[in-house]
Amino acid sequence: MTKADIVDTIATATGLTKVETEAVVDGFISTVINAMKEGKNIEIRGFGSYKVKKRKGRVARNPRTGEQVMVSEHWVPLFKVSKEVKSLVNENLQKGSA
Image 1 (cartoon, rainbow, N blue to C red):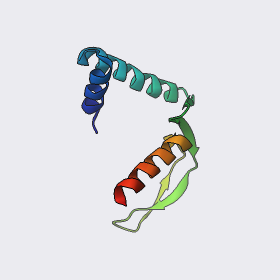
Image 2: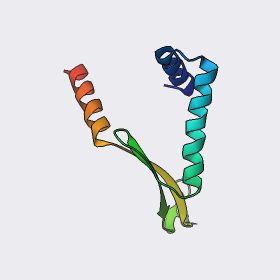
Image 3: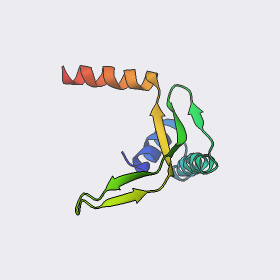
Image 4: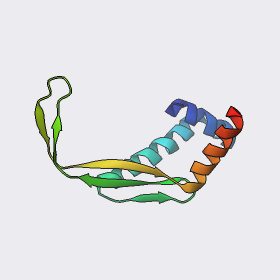
């Protein structure tokens, strides 16, 4: 599903125009990105949480050459889905595969 598909689905469900809906979706995405750039965590109950985690520096290996490469410490954005969403997805997909 693409961002355009999400905009279409929300516009159909709410009665808003696609332009208005796209502005809302873009606003949500930019708010999440800006909060994570500031190191803030975002929690949307019943959906999941966005976090930023610091990864330690380490020695990695180039898969082509086998050469060792030093990877410096860096920050990684993460999304952790809620238990409710996990169980809904699992239940629905289990019904479909049975």
